[in-house]
Image (cartoon, rainbow, N blue to C red; front, top):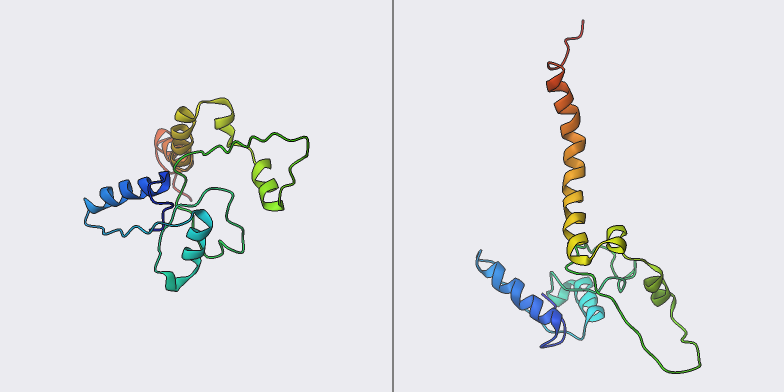
Length: 148
């Protein structure tokens, strides 16, 4: 697993995942990196020997991420930029796209600690209701009606 800078947050997360997975007999080798871009490059290169990595959201372009699958997000990471200058900062198209995206709907109105589990429950419950509601209606109505 390609993590991040030695001693950095992503490297520490990698150590925690390694320890958790080791309990189930899964061996995880951690490889420190310069960050998300290097992690993506390692994932894209089959000869790099990396099968998983931490990548900040908004970093991957469709060209770099072709063939890669996101397993989910760990946390919402705000990015604060402070500068002192009368000049305007010019951003690349990728950076502009990153800053234009807004937080997910629930995170705009609820604190992160509450919005995150609610979003995860919705992902599980909505498909469950789609299956269960017709089944319950069938049971209440006395089962399927025979066709003649």
